[in-house]
Amino acid sequence: MSSYDEFIHLIDLNDYPVSWWKQLLELGHDIKENPENYSEACKGKIMGTLFYEPSTRTQMSFQTAMLRLGGTIIGFDNPATSSVAKGENIKDTTKIVSGYADILVMRHPSAGSVKAAALTAECPVINAGDGGHLHPTQTLTDLLTLREEKGTLENLTVGLCGDLKNGRTVHSLIKAMSCFKGTRFVLISTKELALPVYVKDILSAGGHEYKEVSSLDEAMPELDVLYMTRIQQERFSSREEYERQKGCYILDRQKMLKAKADLVVLHPLPRVDEIAIEVDDDRRAMYFKQAKYGMYIRMALILTILNKNGTPARLVCGRALPSVRCSNPRCITNHEEYLPKYFIGGGDTVICEYCDERTLI
Ligand code: NCD
Image (cartoon, rainbow, N blue to C red; front, side, top):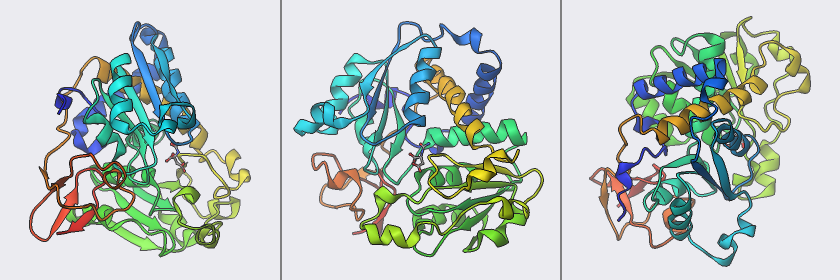
């Protein structure tokens, strides 16, 4: 086992206290206002980006963030052109690249994959999206956007619409917003694309107010924030299943007429057809600005992690149960067999430390 607990890895934002997120947001704001003060802050440092899945904003905003801090970048955005195509596992790739770089940013199609990488990395690792599980740096982006555009993170009614089942940005944002006072959630989706039980359990356990509805039209008037999402085609088991869900929710000018004057419309992007182009000109449409905030908050994150500002979170809190298989077929432990199988809890049901899904033992 490596000394992984010495680094500030960012696998799940909720591994860190809200006070640490607030420091990041403060720094992100200052960087946005005074970028010239930070242009040499990471001089001589190297960031490695390991992108096993397509990305435009996340990858490029991380890369520009590092370049704007005076650092340099290495990495791949197409595993087919790296040794992954020859069958190299996550452990070996991470071990090697973390020996070259000072900080790694990784995106991968399996839930829990970035935690698996962090277990052997020799430098800090940032989760840039692990399958349909989590996307903490998108959440930091969303929080900075709300802080700047709404002026508060408290007492907001947040509507989340679209693919709540597979949308990792949704899971991370709900977990984060449930830490702020007075958040109310309106979950707008079809039954098939409803929020996973483990995320709902977090809401219930925290006593948060939430409701599940199927009509975006009806939800519009009560929302302070509307978080639209793409139906995650790549996470469906068949084309037919995707076709049945596609186009269910489309935000258009007509629906915007029913919304509050100070609604903020967010979307992690890319959009397919869930927001009509006509909405782009509405001053409440914040998604392009949001993408730019993503660069500032990633600058703040890289700087904070490289300067070791914060107490590293423990990567593993549970215990190893070598004979138990995680029930989630998309969990990395079911794809890379050498990984130690860690679970939290006792009794009949345990929680996988990589993907958070429940497994009966
Ligand atoms: C999101 C992602 O990759 O999860 N995009 C992003 O990072 N900005 C959302 C999506 O792909 O729909």
